[in-house]
Image 1 (tube, rainbow over the protein chains, first blue to last red):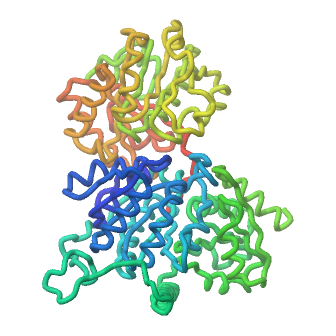
Image 2 (cartoon, rainbow over the protein chains, first blue to last red; image 1 turned 90 degrees about the horizontal axis):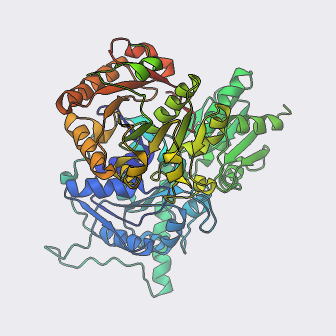
Length: 353
Length: 243
C-alpha cells in the first residue's frame, strides 16, 4: 500500500483500474461520472495505454468487446442511460466468454431521468439486462476505498472466469472525497496472452474464433449449458458480503452500496437506544449471498431492506428469507437519497417505535 | 497556530510572506478540483458576516454535478448572507449556467463578494469573461491540498497555478493552504504539506494568506505560523465511516 491521498470516488475508480492493469478504456461521457473518463484520458496516454472516446455507448461497448477478445484488460464506465445502450454488447460478451470490466455510476431513471444518485439498475445488472440466459458478476462497494480495492478484484475475476464484471456504484459515491490508499501496481508485463485470444494464429495449428453465434439449437444449448456451469461455480465460491453488528442482532437491515453506508449510521443510532440491529450488506449482488440470509433467519425478528429504488434487491432478500420472517422495505426513488435519521425512523415504525 | 482573527486579515498583514489582506472587494477562490474551495468560501462568508460586514456569496461552479453551494442554499438565508446562485433547476442538471443578472450583481458596490469558482482551468477559465466587472480590488486565491493527486509536489502546484492564471486571465494573489485527508488528517500530514506549499510560496513569491482546518482538529496546526480558519463542513452529504 502506498501513501494516503484524498480522492473523489470517480477519480479513484480510474486510478485503481489503471493500477490493476487496465490497458484500454473505451467510453462515452455521461453525467454523473464524467470525471472517470476524464481521468483516464489524462493518465492512459502518459502510460502508453489506450484511451478512446467513442461516438456513442454502442460503439464503445463493441470496442470493449473487440479488445476483450484479444485478452487485454479493458474497461468502460458509464451511467444508467449509457449502460442501457450497451446491453446488446453485454449479451454478446457473455456468450463469447470474454473478460471485461464495466462501471455503472447509477443515476435516477427510468428514461433520461435525472443526474442524481440512484440504485434502480439492480435488476438490470444482476438479472441480465441484455437478452439470453447470462449473468455478469456484480460488485457493489460502499466507500471510496472499497471501490479502489474492488477494481483489482474486478479485473482478476473477469480474467479468472472470462466474464464481464460490473462495478455498480452511484453518482454520490463517485462525487465523495475520501482518503484512500492504493494497492501495488499489477505487474502487467507478467500477463501472458491467453491461448483463446484472437491475436493471430502465430505458432498455433488452428485459428481462434470468438463468436456468440451458434446456428444449430443443439450446439447453442451446449454453449448455454457451459455458461450455466460457469455460473454455478461462481455462485459456489465467489459470494461476498459484510455482516455489521450482526452477532447479537434481533433485527437486520439489508442494503448495498451508498444505502448500506448510510444505514450503518442508522444502526449506530439504534444501538445507542439499546435496539439490537445489524446489517447484512451484499458485496457481490450477483452471486447474491442467499446463504447468509438463510443463516440469520432464525436469529432475527424481521428483515428491513433499504434501497434507492422501488424494491429490487428486496426480491433476492425475500428469496433468502423464504417466507420464514417478515421482510419490510423502505426506498427512495428518482435520485432522492435517504438520510440516516430517515432510515432509522422508518425502521422504528416496524418495531412499533 | 495564529488565531484566525478576521479583523487582522482585514486590517493588517498576517500569513506567510506578508501582504495578506482580505479587505478587497472580491475574494475569488480557485484551485484544482477537490481542493476545498467551496467549504472555505462558505466558512469565510459566515465569518465575515459575523462581523457585521455585508457579504455576498457567489456560486459560480459550472464544473461539478453535485456538492455545490446551491445544494444548501437555505443555510445562507439563516445566516442572512446574500447568495447569488444559478437558477434552481441547476441543482439537478449538469449545465454550465451562471446566475442571472450576474454582471449587475458583480458590479454592485458596497458589499464584500466571495466567489466560489469551479475547479481546474475549466472552472477558472469561465470567469475570465467577467474580468471587467470584477475591476481591480480583488484577491484571487489559490486553494491547495497537497494530499490531492494533482497538487502533491511543488512542481505540480506551480503548474496548476500557471494553468489557472492563464485561463482566468488573472494573477493568483495568494495561496490558501488546505492540506487534509478528511478524518485521517494528522499533524504530520499538515506539516509535510505546509513545507511543500511554503516552498511554492518561496519560489513564486505568492504569499500564503491563511489555512483551512477542520474545527474539530485545530490543535493539529499549533506549530504552523499562519492563521487558520476553522472549518465546519457543509456540503458533504454522506456520514463519515470510521474504521
